[in-house]
Length: 500
Image (cartoon, rainbow, N blue to C red; front, side):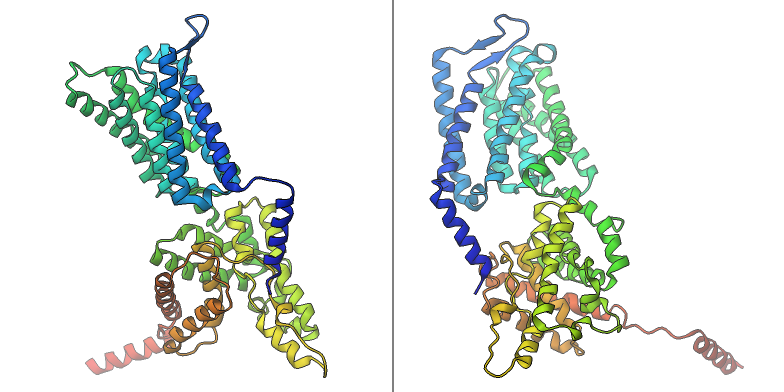
């Protein structure tokens, strides 16, 4: 029934015959490489002042570092595999995560070269920007992964310290937690600027408090200063790294998502001018999808942007879509049903091409095919049934979209919101809205369109309620009638006569 699924399975089988390893095997192979690389990085110190410039630790320290780092890294990846297995099996995201940890560790080791200018020799661990890794992991993966990255990098900071390592570890972890919490709600540049000072301040306070609680004779001024500056530097590096991280992960940062909602975006301008009906439909779908995402705790900003851009493929042939026809006649009246079906389904391919042409990332592009899945184009299927000759048959599968199913809460919400918005125009009585929404959700469920999405029945109940509330608000926006100017004058004159 689903040609996309058959094609995907066939591709998978061809991949198996090439002898490629299973994703889990690649995961643990990458984990071993990560552990080995980190272990090597923490067995030496760099210096431009003390020949031979590379100073290795003693053998006992090397063995200890190797064992500790290897065990910790494998436990760390094991936890993430348990909690985020699907994410880690995606090669691009796995490489980004492991690469992020390595880059932060390399930055810390490279700072050894500057350490003599900046801090005493035994405080070089304070130059490791642990909050950088935690913040970027939160922005491009999620907060739980960001928390895990914070824990691992903070441990590396502690291992790199010979003076008060516990204080260094706790200060780095506290600052990284601030980075995670702020990055999880990053929609304005000012949030990141403020976060830099917050990260530094929390690190400074924690370092001072732990040092005092340990009964050390005095606070180290350089350590306190670099605890503060580390946060500011980490936030600055997060901002600088956003474009590269977007490219590596093919995900859009929250700042980028907000920018895509700017009405002056070229694609949105084109939609308003060339396909105003589609633009109006997309804004309504965005309102529905945003309210549903907020109701279940999904990424409301991402699904809102996805809603604005999900139908950009209609820009190629806007007159073939009902919302843009505006009483000028329907060109499908002159076409055979199968030809109409080909034109309608082509807006997916056209949309993906336009999205790539305008530089949209994969996390936005995915909404273009997945909001249809393999659903049936019912109008033209029924038209084909009515037009068939005797002895001929029409397969419903010939009138399905050939696209992947929604595989996230956000893409599933958009599929439902798109269908609900389109159907809402045929409803005259608000009392019928709940039944219409329920019918569409049940239809998508029974047709298997939500089979790959993580939505639960509880989620669907909240989504339906959010849809109904938003639809009622949308339908009542312009129902308030205002008196005309001549009516106001007549009423005013009548009131004046009444006073006389």
